[in-house]
Length: 379
Image 1 (cartoon, rainbow, N blue to C red):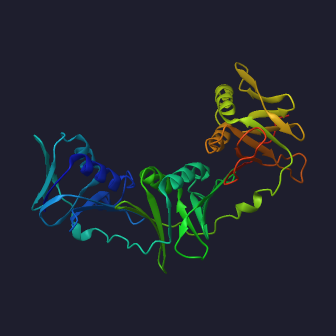
Image 2 (cartoon, rainbow, N blue to C red):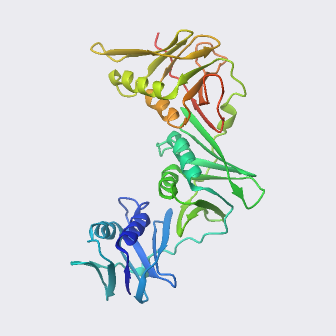
């Protein structure tokens, strides 16, 4: 194999190919990136049996071939090469990478032992990449990081007609975002995608045009693929039944407060400074406004009052500040509506519902909803 490629294009392609690979693997061969010449130029791929990444770039190919080489090392080298065309060639089991006056020699890995890349089916639909990336950022933060229950470490994608919904939960909160998409069919479908993989997809494809989504279901494996502009990421789906969290959302709420989003974020960040880790912050909503109160320790306490318009009863809730900040990060309007739900047990507070609010008087779109379970109030 021998080819020449643009240094920045090659470096970006290698970085994309290895981005989803695990930092450590029991099979060294899975840490490799596969380079193959094609009629269009050069294809770079990576695969660890759970996720794969594939991209094609233009290259001046002098000799056809394929080679497997350490992915992260190649990415580091490509990123550090001088600003000159990259030349890569093979000599038996060696890979020579050069650019300008720099030259590196690497040992290749056995291509014959590398697993076959998963096949991608026809797209089920497509949507603007920016919208999809934004929705992932809003929802994935609520997915669990506890591998003991794998089913809630993922984000559930649900398609119905021209709508795609993303749902995530870690038992303490639920985030939902619905966006429009162009479906190739009319049947509703679901896919439970690992949150980490989906977040990488959002970061990688966020500035491209459209992203197409393809779901492949078979007897032995279920696979989802995201493709955009000569790049494809595939992931195995998480098996299991996602909890029916939609029923937790109330149809109507009569008791709520409207608060300035940025003002609430800044006040929460300030007052939480005195809290110990995992401690909750008390929010008191009254007709006079919102009081944030943190009893951190004997050495430090903090409180702050900000404006709020309360409809209904005065309410006191105790919330983990970071969980609330995660929800507020998904609100892209000047104001936020915080609604207070009721439970059958008067001693147990109901979840608070965070949604967008266009103005103090006009409710925003309900395409994004964030439901957060309060902590029990300390008497």
